[in-house]
Image (cartoon, rainbow, N blue to C red; front, side, top):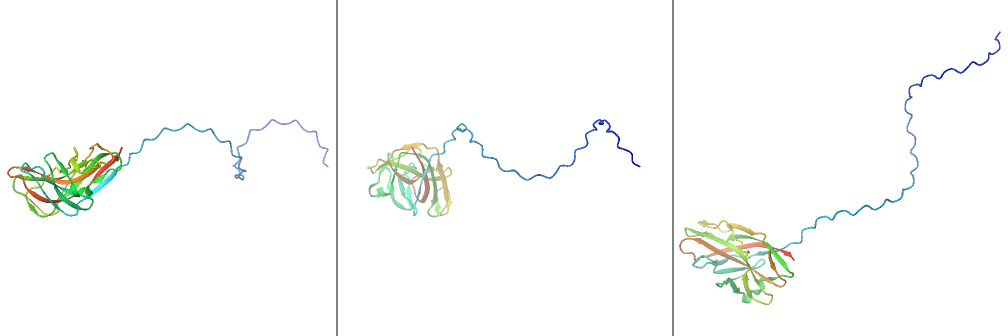
Length: 226
């Protein structure tokens, strides 16, 4: 038969810690806590660089070729008045490179603000097949002239003659093209100033330098308000 239960023995020493068990599955996401207070405003950043000021482009073009010529020194004797898609007339240049526009004053435009003439670009092409005399080099170019608001007397503006580096010589076909530009002109003009655009030619070389030839002119003027 089973005997009576004996008295409980003393507690034994604690055994070593066992290896960790595998991680249990992730519990459900808790509720979102309340929004915290707004932080203090940070310091103002540095000012960015200024944008480039506006530049306005005035395009010009002749409707048809005009015949213009030179004097015995090879300098311009007359000029083709260039409008904005039209050819109005050919005017004679005085010795001081001024001219009276007369009835053609509608071909000049007036500045609506103080401005700086930044650059001029011109494309020039022959109006017909031309055979230039031997030893001559012909340079068609564009020149700007200016007058006061109520004046028809126009004077050439310095540093605005746009002359191609390569002249025309020998035999060239109609629509043979030359292009030229003048940048960083930096010429200040005031409100109301009337600007006239003229196509002209120079002839360099030996022999007779007085000749007449036909050209078309197109291009643009860059104006920066001041």
